[in-house]
Length: 147
Image (cartoon, rainbow, N blue to C red; front, top):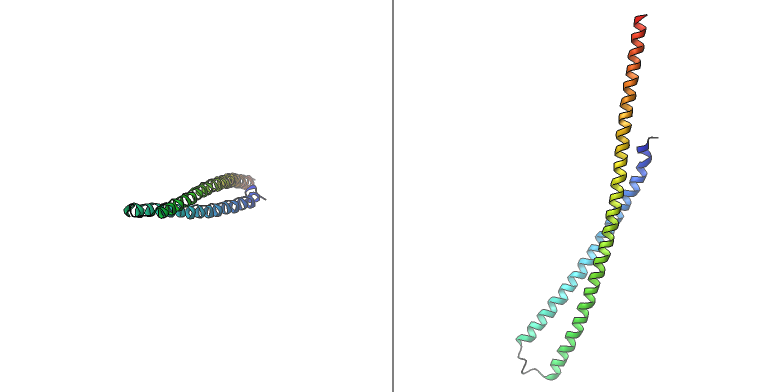
């Protein structure tokens, strides 16, 4: 069996590994995007809430209402901080999955390149052998004619 044929299953396994790694990159990217969108929503909500508060008449607002607003903003800021941390974690996970995918892809390409080189060598060897066979056939025919 030719070397290129023996390596074909290895390339198939490498291709499957690359595909599996790419699927993980896709799901990690989707999770990161969802968390990022939620963080953007929280920041937008906080900005809108503060804007409404600033447009309102603060002199008429009771002390109880101000304390409730402050407490709400503290909780909202904590939620934003937690979501920011979640986005960072998802980003790191995405980076790890991308690195694994890049390594798998690189391995697959190296294996495919090796198979291509082996096939090229096999083709050249077959061409040389065919040329030798033709030369031998022509030589034997020439010798037979001379007799």
